[in-house]
Amino acid sequence: MIKIANAPCSWGALEFDLEEKTQEIGFEQVLDEIKETGYMGTELGDWGYMPTKPQALRAAIEQRGLDLLGAFVPVALANGHNHQTGTENALKTAKLMHDAGYKKAVIVLADDNGTVPERVKNAGRITPEMGLNDTQWNVYARGAETIARAVKQAYGMRTVFHHHCGGYIETPEEIDKLLSLTDPELLGLCLDTGHYAFGGGNPVTALKKYEGRIWHVHFKDFAPEIAKASQAAKGDYFDAIKRGVFCELGKGSVDFKRIVKLLKERKYADWIVVEQDILPGMGEPKKCAGSNREFIKSLGL
Figure 1: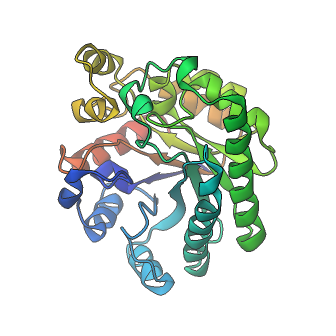
Figure 2: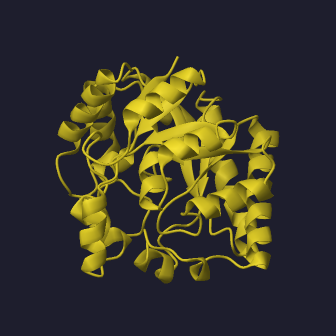
Figure 3: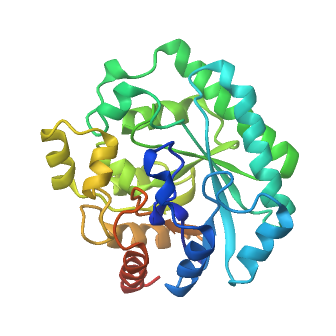
């Protein structure tokens, strides 16, 4: 059975260190509105956004009849000096979810997106010259595997890698490279439809290509005309978000009807997480969450 969740980033609770952080909506309201708009679960959000004590976290999730299915863990993997701290952070996050009773939750590992100026500036138009060199690739892949192995050994939990604009693994070619360098039994893929489209690919193609590695799915739409307007104005990744590049589901270029058909054909029986990334203080998150849930219902989910 495919289950539908939403995540705090759809309410502007992002992992980035932004001035707008002061405008973040509290986790209690976010959980209430996730429930009220018809979703079954949530991701954890940035460390410290929700309670960091297992009993308190369990109570907050359970009293709303929701499930907790994963947590985003950013690590600047291209630098080997970050691997130990990254592993510690992943284990800390996995322990919280495990001890709160969510033992099937996944670690959603990603680059420390937004910290490399060239990648932030050129999101959606990355060239090979902006990528990792051979040494960095090996370091990156080793770090991802180290974290995934540590989480699996300590808590029996799976790790998926989340490709992401504004970080080092954005384009289809970069995703190919990382997956080719890592153990398919150890590291899965979180396919994010919006980031894949923004990074220059077709999510339908990705779903066919990586079906054995896709253990977690994020539904996000992408508005190419907004990306073009941002690029024309020399805007960076955050400018594109501010303009609404990740629009409501069904209003962008992602072919969700075909994606749902493929997921069903492949007997995908896990979570789909709606993510409509916005900056803190933007838009009407609850209204968008409701519209996105109705759109997914129209696809038979």
